[in-house]
Length: 297
View (tube, helix red, strand yellow):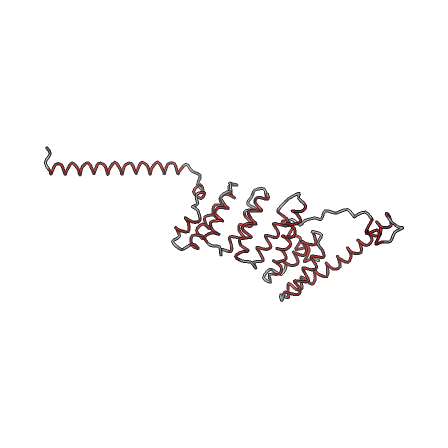
C-alpha cells in the first residue's frame, strides 16, 4: 500500500498532467481555428451580425453607441464590396439593425434610400421597394423631412416599373404627393418647388404644376423661393394658354372633319374620342439637367 505522502504526490502529478494535456488541447484548437479563419476572405467577418435583440443586450443600454459601431461597419463593408464589385446582400440587414437600435439616426434613412437602389447592380423593383421601406420608416420618425419625401416621390415616379396602367397611375399619384409635400415643408431648398413643377409638367400635368406653385407662393416666406416660383408660374401659365389654344384648334379640326353638320356640343357627345398620348416621365439622372433648364426659363 502507498504511503499517504506518496499517494498525495501521485494525485498532484496526475492533476498536473491533466492540466498540461488540457492546455495543449486548447492550444491546438486555437491554432486550428486561426488556420481556418485565415482561409476566409478578408471581409468575411462582416457577414456575421447578431440579431438586433442580441445587439441591444450587448450594448448594456448604450444602443446609440452600438448603432454607431454597426454604421461604421456597414460603411466599410459597402466600400469594400463596391470597390471589389462584391455582393451587397448583407447590407440591408446591417441597416435594419441600425434602425432597430436607434430609430432617430436620421442619416441612415437617406443613405439606405440611395445605396439600396444605386448599389452598382441593375435596378429592379425589389431594390426600389427596399429603398422605399427605409424612406417610409424615416418619415415615421421625421414626418416633415423634405429630403425623404423628395427621394420617396422620385422612387414612385421614376424607379418603380410596371405595365399595369392602374398601378402606374397609383404610383404616379403617390410620387407626386410626396414631391408636393417636400416642396411645401418650408425647409426645402429654393429650387425644389420649381423642380417638382417641372416634373409634373414633363409628365403632362401642367395644371397640377400650376396649382402646386400657387400653393407654394401662398405659404412660403422665402423670397428667393418666391422669385423662382413666380418665374416658373408665369412660364407655365403661358404654356397652359398655348396648350389650350392648340387643343381648341385640334377640336375644331376633328369637328369639321367628322361632323361639320352638327353643333359642337353634339360632336362632344357622339364624335370619336381623341387618341391617348403616352406622356414622358422624367428620369432621375435628368433631374439636375431639368433644374438648369428651369432656371434658364
